[in-house]
Image (tube, rainbow, N blue to C red):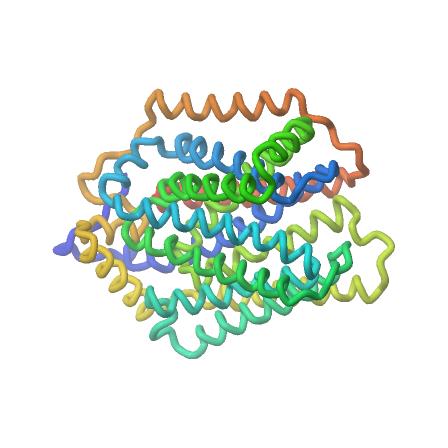
Length: 434
């Protein structure tokens, strides 16, 4: 079992290199998050029955809810969640708040796409990267004393990624804007503000020592509750039930998309913890690039498009990769990490959390003498129940009647699984998923 050194010990060379190792791990998690969050869009492409966007979002969130409890139970067990709850009960409200913010932001994107089209809306809400950098600087000491090179790398990289995202969104849009409405612009910007601010509770939780796998379990209650309230409030209970009954043979694909999204979000949580929200958000926003690859190579979305469209795809992809590279090579320096440590100790004093516990968790370790997490029968019941529910919906799911490029799909599936394996093994070896 990993444990943090005591104050009287002389740090070894291995321990002195640990912050750098955690930074690299955070960057790797951000890239894996982008791949899995992008892949989560693929199952929604299989649904062509004209469902309300709110219904699609609601069913995906149901899949998210099942996965957010079963995945942590499988990896660490609910005993670890209970231990975090006892140490940091104040973070439950922050997790619920973050879940509610996600649901409202997701709903705002639906109206933004309806009013101004995806090509304009996507780059507007991707501005959450820049807002995340701002909040990280203001609240958590990120980029403070980082030096102008790292400032240029992170800010410049995020700006270049936004420019690349704009080109990709224009190229990949398959629908013309319905109306260039100011309301749609404000909805897209509002979604970006909420998604960028949503990471403040994330970072606050991890500076307090809460395990990312614990945080997401409470996050999903706010997520599901707010999404259900929005769907019922906007559609009405009877029409909502009618749409669910009408679409029962495609519900599995939407739930499965939610499950895939959770895998990406878990990696995103670790990216926010170990590389900070100023770097974790832009790296995970590469999901747009992965989503484009699914649409382009698997579903043939741009088949027959003009040369100009393909040039936009190539240009946007190169810009996004350049931005990712700039951010990846702008890891936090020792002086900046000292600011992170100061922020974590401030959280510990504010909420009466043991400082050695917070310090250990910030290093991806367990506190000396802390009980190792273990699985209980309840954990296997949760995993079995979630699996049974997914299996039941899969039994009456309708196979998609559409043309797919299976070789390309196999290549992308293998690529995402390889990232899952590499990042999962790295998380286990370095942090034991702490």
